Image (cartoon, rainbow, N blue to C red; front, side):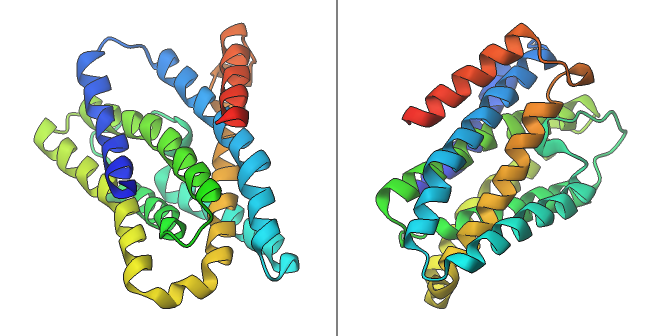
Length: 227
């Protein structure tokens, strides 16, 4: 079921883009803002407390969270900020963007192998799904707006959709990864922490907190707290 949810969350973007083709970028940015606030609430109130509770060496967890945060900065050097809604008008999408997003998604899927507590597993799954949908919408929109054929755009999205389930499958096949599950989880938290905070501050023009953006942030936090 986890694999299905991870895969389908990405392809829901096709429905959104195809059905709501006239949706303005501002509306997508509001969805990104909501997802960023949801991620932040989920991370601070569910994922971080859980990982410190179950980690055998709490002193190292903070270091791995920071490593994840820094690793995401490196990934965004190649993805050009698509994770938090940056639109780019180009004749062609560099393959480095797809590779960066795929690495990001693959790593996120590894901790979902079933070795987490149910509450932690569900919290991380919800965080990934909530983030994947708007990112997939942005990615598909960029492909189509830059002249990529639908056939190719859907194929690229298929690759992206497969990465998180592939990370999950890899961790299930290579059971030795379980030993480092807390560390990988901490890295994922750092990645999501960077993305969530960046989304909140960069998902509107000139970084201004408009009324609609504040409402989206508040709704995202509320849903994240009680999810």
